[in-house]
Length: 433
Ligand SMILES: Cc1cc2nc3c(=O)[nH]c(=O)nc-3n(C[C@H](O)[C@H](O)[C@H](O)COP(=O)(O)OP(=O)(O)OC[C@H]3O[C@@H](n4cnc5c(N)ncnc54)[C@H](O)[C@@H]3O)c2cc1C
Image 1 (cartoon, rainbow, N blue to C red):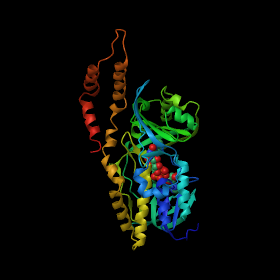
Image 2: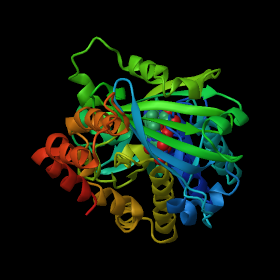
Image 3: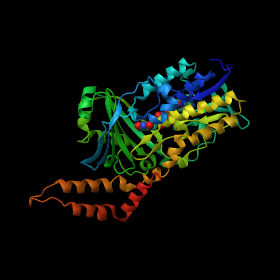
């Protein structure tokens, strides 16, 4: 492509956020180029694999109509673990809602599908093109440099992921410490669909989400997951980077995943499977209080680049926020082009749209979650003691007795919880209010 071509929008990054934005802006007839430093769309992206559909059904319904989803999740569980044992709370939801709550996805085919949809609408996808520098005209951003080459447009969209170079260079990223990031490590294990359905007790085509916390992260803040795809399992851990960097242990982070896979309650689920993908990636975990302004005149931040991810401990959402923010940025750009294009008005429109959307509302609702999840007791003291109390309740000793419900409850309230625990419980109950 010649640098003299007149562009309306340059999108840096071909992940979910960038591709949603590319599709929508190109569909409106704008001249759009998407720069991707990887070999293909999404080749550098990594996710766990569960996409919540309802929040994006209106904004992205048309775009996602034929998307390559894996399985509709109907089975949920949360499992607490100690060194040897685990205890689960599980819901097999056979009610049939009008719209599925969530699906599992493999990011590569999904990004590829979105790239094709955007290209069909006329967006130019430029793989192996890395934006190296920003071009400013006074306070306004007017383009990017790829090596020595300049590419200019009325709007640049930073969809370049969690370590957004554009947000950094534009001075938009607040000083975030390691506590604001999680390190995600994930493996995809190929397994045939019948085997998956038998092992996870699933009807054909339906999927499961299994979440884990406790000693699987060796007392570090974080948790594990298994999601069922059509012919593979996604298994991984997300561990807080701050906790990891202060960790005094010989164990490497990748060994945590190996130990997780080798657990007696996990290994049989994976048996006979073949690892077909392995990766590590950061996750923005700072939440609402660490969000930067979502741009400056001429530049809009979307997806992970804007910090749009939240983790409540039992729900991790980034993909639906990436898709929705890409769409909202596109709509603000389109609106500005229909009016007398003004980059400041475009940014204000986008910011307003974000405030009115589920993205800001939900992130604000869960703004206390990042703090709450730093509680060390969540990862060792509570899981170990709850498992031990439950064990005592079920075990019959040689005198023919098992622990009484009264004593178990008393021990739980006074020994396991205590004052600190009651305070933790109160904070947990008030997390989203
Ligand atoms: C282990 C893990 C588990 C997760 N689990 C879930 C989950 O189950 N559900 C959920 O909703 N979310 C989950 N998330 C979060 C979710 O995956 C992300 O929020 C989402 O994929 C972000 O999409 P994005 O388009 O903003 O960024 P990305 O997918 O990271 O895309 C950014 C793109 O920009 C490109 N790029 C970067 N710099 C440049 C440059 N200078 N020039 C050109 N291109 C550039 C990159 O190559 C990349 O393709 C998880 C994340 C991880 C790591």
